Image (cartoon, rainbow, N blue to C red; front, top):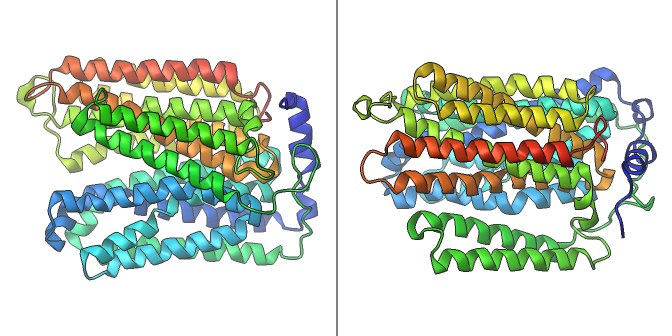
Length: 492
């Protein structure tokens, strides 16, 4: 089976399967309220995700646990996220965004409250595990956007969601330390949890206002009805493959890339992915129609997503390490954790602005061009990091990288949200989320090994090499965007 031509996918996904705004029966004000609710949910959920690392030392002291035990607070939600994100996207495709989002919001609220008020560390870990469901809200949000807005509006709305995820992550890193120092864990987690609930209330209030809308059943690319069940076997194998990848990455810091154990994990993950593709190509209603991975909207977006993570994650790993080195090193700034947070804010602010602008531009320009330019900005930011560690260079590097990574993320998410068939929007955008995470994790481990290979304080040349690796991977993303993303304004 060959994927349809670009114009065939565009016609099927945006004409045959999409109701017009008027046919939905929801007013412009109702759609704005729904988007506002989604944005607030994503903002608050992302901030909850960003709290752990800055406050982990304080939490370890409060609960009286050692660092190895305390690390579970970041490891457990990461593992849950890996499993939940693609599954949440598929559940939204099958059962609808509203039902899936309601469950996710309820779980995240429960996790936030347990994290806030749990009396012991095991209770806190249980809360963090439930908060691991938060990232699954993002692909479900794109399913909701696809239903609420027309093709051009989806691109702008996608920029809003991406910007809120960036703002939330940045806000979490920036305010977590000061809040827990001046107040308590209960305040730290309860406030954003309340905002998740408020956002959910706004979204469902808007949905009730348009409850009389008549929505046609989703149609597949071939014109058939949408899926009626979840491919649990495929989902399980895919989750297992991702978990093995996570274990492989975690083993590299202690054992190295050439370790038989690490290589064994990587081989096992590859075999599981091959098994997953085999299963998906044979079941009647697959988790992912593997033929869509040959389309520009999905396959191209996933490929560029890997490059976004691979170019950006190493940079935001390297810069805190770089500026935190003592002044006596000849290049470090001796920055404290709080000062490092202020530096990183530059990237987050730039990312919020870039996401909104990219969403608007995506409605008017080619995803191919926008994606390539965005990845070029990311590469420029990484190259600037290789020049030196003065405050001006550090801020410039973070701003360029933040602009590029955020704009590129908006482009690939909107390409998938618009170009995928309606019943595959959730899982397609989830694949992009996973692709960014995997690309970032692998690249970060590579540059981390460059620093850990040096005894004592690393030479600046080690940091320069890491930034050049990030720049090279971003340049690969420029090429991927130019060759693989949609040529038109958003369809596959």
